[in-house]
Image: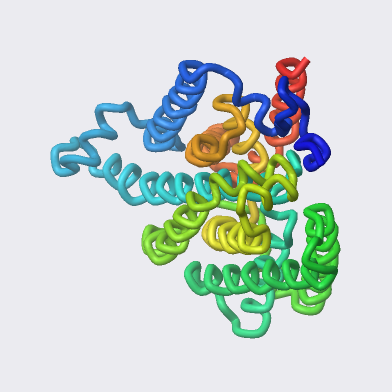
Length: 362
């Protein structure tokens, strides 16, 4: 069997070596990849500055720096409160959530070999949402950290269940089967969630504030409590970089290179739960972030996961912070929740990215 036959989703290169469409974009020069990564890094730095400076009370950059370094020197103490107590926590949470979802999106797309895969595809968001509903309705939970624990537990149980159902089909279960099972579980959990909420109006009233997706109303205690889980997810993702590159060439090629596909897919599920589950627990379900973060990073630096993973985290964090800033400015003196802004921006941005990638491929 030739390498091309072993990887039906790959393209042939001179000499008969197979090459995945996911890796074609990586043929660009090292300088071009570094420029792309640098641009996204600058975008993230700008997003952080805007997140700290803009809101219902606009603050210039020098005041922001003074509020962070020497708040007692400010003429108006309200500036210190706005920056340190309100904007710093939501900026930090936005960075954590966006980076986690962006990285989870890359892992999801790599393990399923599906360029439109998203962390919600394996039931992560649906499982977290259903668990939050149960926590509110059965345990009367209302605290941010308490709801986060319920959400993370739901994401973990659901994703492990999806993996178990897919493995029941046999050792050679395809990524497509994993996606189908994920869709089925998501649909079923969505129905159960609706049934519980319809029978408990009080739970519905509390749940709707969580499900819209928001960075406000959270404090740094919740972020610090859950941050070790994100760090663990990043560590596991880093170990998966080379296996996912091999998996992009097809199952048979990956096996031939010595990788154990069961371990790769199991590690990917763990990573997705840790990253996407924690992000959902912190900020509620945010759509499109993993998908757009992965596409933006791939357009900037190509498809090799060793570089793609950190850049996707940067892109996801920048996207969440920009969406949060837009939400603060479009409806003064109030604001739109970041989940609403992301949903409104996500579809046209995704279409633009896909069209750009097609133009490059042509």
